[in-house]
Image (cartoon, rainbow, N blue to C red; front, top):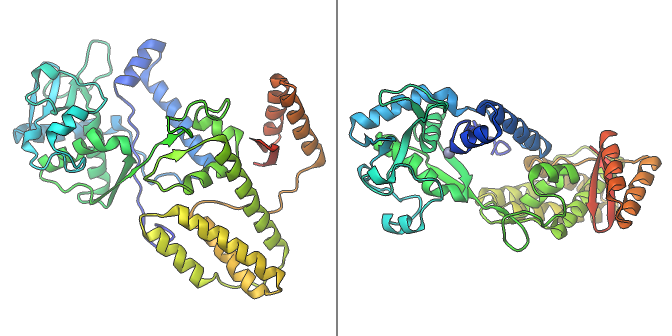
Length: 402
Ligand SMILES: [Zn+2]
């Protein structure tokens, strides 16, 4: 969007209080905010490694509790909400088009249902009514409210922060496909009940799954989560893998496509390196290529086909330089760089690796073949400490500067 000249204000909120956090704090006997600070730091480290830009605003739910209490008060005074023994609930019958986002009627949604814990079901007027405020048990973190000490419901956090920071009728609301219902539906329901316009457009992304379509777990050896993944592979390779799948589709992550991403990335880096050394004339990017790229990206962010344009342009630039057309080659190479930058995929040139390091990488492979995983791990850690990214592929260990 920024590449197209659109001014972007991205708000990405942090839920720093909920039932799961409180359960974990109790289980591990730690303060709840120590857990949330740690998780937030780990998250942004991984995002940095992937080249994900920092959002403009990162509001924390606990900083907006007063505003949430205020909003719930408005819903109470317009009779859209009611209190029970354990909290305050939204009466979804006060929201005429409830279910709009899920494209389902209420009865179907209830049979499908969400997987979040339903509190106080017995006293709810309608099974789909949801908690805006939950009264706290003794010893739990709590904030004051006119209805009793407690904490906000998850759905109330996002609606307050997004309306406060972005204003009514903001352009775009994103989130994982699993949040469409009930979370996003319920955020929207509160805005509707308040008589406010909520998001104009919604984008829901697919899950990361393994090659069998299951939630990613053990498909990559000892890699089970994002933190592991960005340690074992060049994070740009994972970014490329994501770009080669449409955001609405599930992303299948397995050894084969990680390996092929690592290889494709090496090809792109190799191309950038050759172009840097070719002393090409300074020309502007090929306009036809950029126009095609833009057209694809304008079509619901069609990154798989946009990546295909990049590979095709690399191929054409290679042909151009072989036939001595440096002018054409230069304009195509500039276009490749511009498209990669638009996708946040930074190419590297001149990655000449020291012979000693290459040697160590071969010893790592030898140790792995001999199933001496302790030695293999020790070498990997040593190389990482020396500032290298160590990638494990079927063809052996690849090393590149971090
Ligand atoms: Zn949310």
